Image (tube, rainbow, N blue to C red):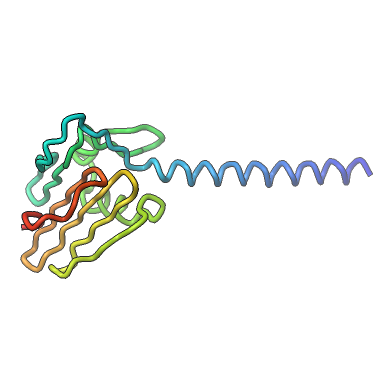
Length: 146
């Protein structure tokens, strides 16, 4: 009887641990991309990162950080040593991060948003693949993705 009780307690503990870890993974997922708003938003788009083929613009932000190995690192520093497309795809495809997405008829540019962050991933017929990251008040402007 004691063995059965101990086995039941062990099984319950295993389920509690699994449930706790799965909830933490979901909570961590929502913190994959962290932004810091600027206090004085001039509503200007600023070049945040650039390499030979890609540009990321920021809107009303002081900082854009991503979570890597349980540490937060500035996105532009991470991109210096890591694959741009893979990183941006991981961010834009993160279902736990975004509440809404809109695809535009310019070739497939997509706007992803949640209550704090908006990300616009350009994909135009002309070949523009710029990225815009800003607060949730950022709107798709006619000057974007040109």
